[in-house]
Every structure is written in structure tokens, then in C-alpha cells.
Length: 47
Image (tube, rainbow, N blue to C red):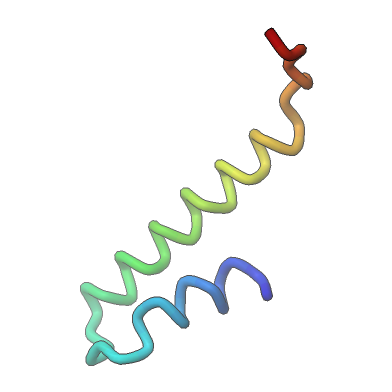
């Protein structure tokens, strides 16, 4: 499942409005950015 489908599934029971579409788009972008930063960050050594 990609992030777009995941975010859409979270709000499937809500009435789709312009505000909700904007919010879902922002949420998806933030999630994509967070995933990318975790994938590309240097690995931390355990304590």
C-alpha cells in the first residue's frame, strides 16, 4: 500500500470536502518526507 492509499483509507468514512482533500494531501506529503528521511538517514549505533 502506498502512502496515498494509506491516508485515503484513514478518512474513508468522512465526507470528502476540499478542506479534507487539502489536509490529506499535506498529511501524505509529510509522511512521504518522514519516510524518505528515515530511509536516507545514517544508521545509529546502539547505546
